[in-house]
Length: 115
Image (cartoon, rainbow, N blue to C red; front, top):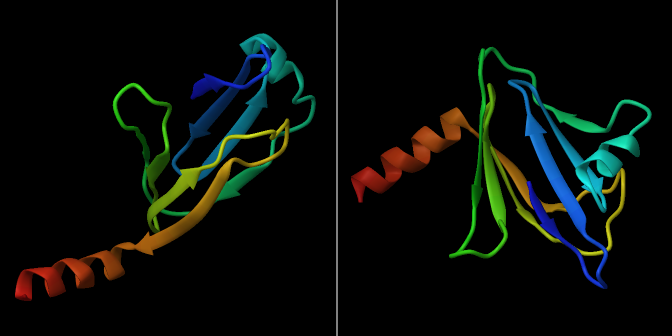
């Protein structure tokens, strides 16, 4: 996750992943206040699969906040970019997201190797 926000009000974004789901949490000004906003189960994206683990990686340039992510899931690689702004609890900061199935990734790799 990362901190950000404007106007002197600190806002946090936390992204958490399990082998089949990812969650987004947005809020502040403290982490305690962020999670206190979620009195019901938070929204999530679910990609069922047969992996017993997952990996979530963030990408950034230098010391800037993360600009995109990839998530290893059972059905494939899920990726997206972040657009931080005035989002609040329950909103998403993810856009330009897609799932690249493992078979499609292998075809792209084989096509690149052949050229």
